[in-house]
Each structure stands twice: as C-alpha cells, then as structure tokens.
Amino acid sequence: MKSSVLSALILYLTFNTLIFSFKPAIYYKSRGDWYMNKGLSRKALLNYQRALQLNPKLAECHYHLAIIYKKQKLYKFAISEFINLIKKEQHLTYKEFLFLSYLGIAEMHFFIGKKLGVSSQKQGNFLKMQQYLKQLITICEKKYSNNKNKNYSINFKYFLGKAYFILGRLFRDKHREAIYPEYFLKAYKFGYKKAAALYFLWEYHYHKKEFSKASIYKNQALKLDSNIFKKGLSVFIIDFFKK
Image (cartoon, rainbow, N blue to C red):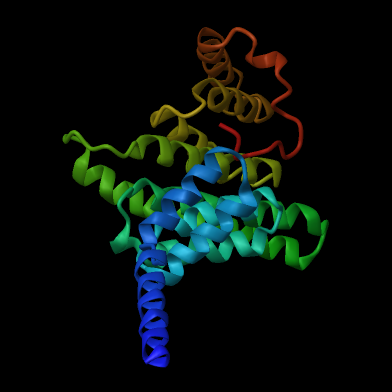
C-alpha cells in the first residue's frame, strides 16, 4: 500500500514538474531581450540559444546573437549568425533585420580584413564586404522601386545611401578613381552623409584639375556643413560603418 502511494506521489510530482517547468521559446527570447537591454550579454546569449533550440523559426534571435558576438570581436561567429538570419528571411517579424544583417556581414569582413594587414586574405575579406554590400543594394533597389510611393516602414533610402557611401569610401581609399565618384553621387541622391559625399566629389574633381566642377561641389558641401573641410575626411580608412 505504502509503495503504491509513494509511486503515485512520485508520478504526480514528476508530471507537475514537467508541466510547470516548461517555458515556450518566446519566453526565452523575451528574457534574452531583457538581458540584452541591461547589457548582460552572457545571459542574453544563453536565452537566445535556448529560444532557438525550442523554435528555430525565431530568426530575430540570430541577429541579437550576431550583435553579441560582434561586441566580443568574434567576427566569424557573428557572420554565421547573420547568415542564419538571412536564410530564415520568411520567418522575420521585423524585416529591417534582413538589411541590417547584410550590412553586418560586410562590417565583419571589414574588421577581419583590417586585422590581416597586407595579404591575399585581407583582399578576400574586402571582396566579400563588397559582395554583400552589392547584394544589399540589389535587394533594396528592387524593393525601393516597388514601394517608394507607399507608406513602407523600412527606410530603403538609408540602406541604399549607406551601402553606396561605404563602397565609395572603400574604392576611394584603394585609389579606384574610375569607380568611386558614382557611388558618392548615389549616396548623395539617397540622402546619406550628403556633405561628406560632396566633399569626396570635390576632392576627386580637384585632383583631376577640374576646378569648375570641384568648386560647385565644395560650395554645396559648405552649405550643408560649414566645417566639413576641417573634419579630416581624407584620412585613410576611417570606420566606414559609423552612422
């Protein structure tokens, strides 16, 4: 009798433990978000990983994991998480994370390339950086063209402008003069760092001894930012990805 009662009690406690200790994936994602906002990256990481174990479709968790790895300078891990998010595009609630992930992959390759010094591997990372920026431009141009007359929540102009500006700066610093002016013109068109884009257009035409064009760009740049020529923009490879 005692044995059967004890067995029933154990079964009851085991059942209740299983039922009441179970938490859905969204619970762990929410905990991850809370810890992330508090700056507790380690706890956030564990909760995002648990959320993905329970529900691999929570694609936003990959973005947050990538940001944590970026802060830890684990750039290859960050790239892996950004790629995982891109593969799960259809499950995204916040579509902006898709475009941020393309930028994120480009940024990680930039940082990896900077650490490698002069080598073929460095150039390989810069080529991958260009590849993902151009993919971002292709996606955004298509979506911007289809949605520019609609009240669309994603700022495609921002992503287009930033991608073009970064490419312009990269090619400018690599002395690819035949390419980079077009990128700065497009960055200006989409309203990203307009004064800086005009500065680099002035610089290009000034060095080409096209002083009339250079003067036009200089005057336009000064109207937008009277200190633009004092900001040291010609320093080799600034941080492309700062806002």
